[in-house]
Image 1: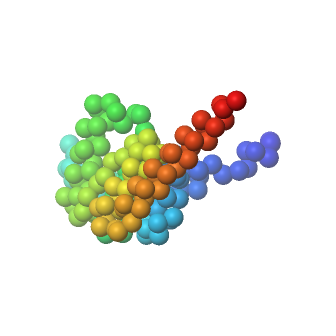
Image 2 (image 1 turned 90 degrees about the vertical axis):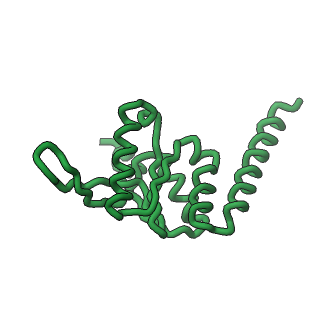
Length: 149
């Protein structure tokens, strides 16, 4: 067995994807209190009557905000419907105040952290946007200067 197999992947450290690990790092950077992979017990009414089911949300942020990071598979109509009913159930049962769904692209561009900070009413939301814009410009300048003769 190679040594590489012993390293822990992001999802083994409590994250399901690279985007979730990135968003957690961004929240730590802005000192936002959050809990990754938070389990909730949710009441579900099925054909056998009411049952309780454990569901995991990607992040619970202070103030009762749940943040779900969605990849490509959540674009289908079936998954969207399931996500919507799950979100409604979490809010109805008082597990959170609101559920925000963001894409992997939103995390990479900085839109996700800005939306979270706006929801929390953090004064740094404008700063987060400005820093994201600076990073984009810096990346563009670096890429352009690479091809200069």
